[in-house]
Length: 282
Image (cartoon, rainbow, N blue to C red; front, side):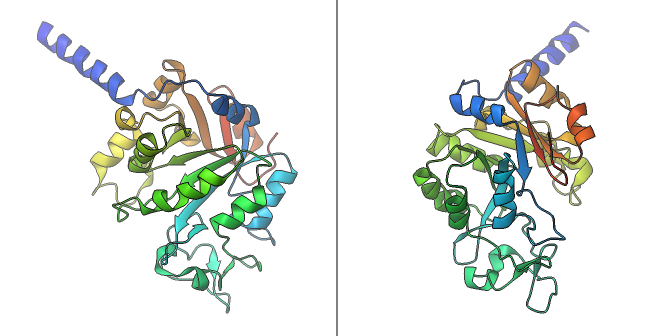
């Protein structure tokens, strides 16, 4: 019996070690927390002329005093573009108004910019266009979209030099722990965040990758990535690892994606930063 108790204690302390995030203090983290509200993919309306991740949606977010959370990935010819899904079909339309098949990475920049977003005339913006538009006017959370096929983390190597020249306040985040680790190794001064969710409930291929999803949703890659903040699916705010990171290790905690003022008010004591969509948050 004693051996079992000792084993349980050892496993518990190993667990605490694995999920322990970074512990540094930073004026950037304080500034990000002070902003508090971040418009997910801009202040968008997909039934309007300012759909998600469009320059119009980003401008509206700035005009209304919000920070911005957005997504970056690479075209086939290696140009960083702003688009959320790996697959184009949900948002991108061809000249006939039909959903575009394939991935962002299947098309060159020229091809991507021949499409439009939803029923608007807005095009898929480049990351350079996004940075030029924002120009330091509001804090930005840059999400790196990293597919498993990107073994060399090309997106980090291409996008980061652009961020090095950017003068505004920003941080980076990714669902892929390899991207967070890249920043720890190559740009440790930049505030980095780990995105996560209850993957074994939300991912269709959970049976194939259940172990990776289990480790990710319980933040067990933190020991190697040392994130400065945790951005966690607000539907699963009770997850033990997330709460330990915030309440024991006092790590900055970001909620995604808040979809109503009621939900924001209910979670106001559980997170420090709120990434929202579908309404005007206060």
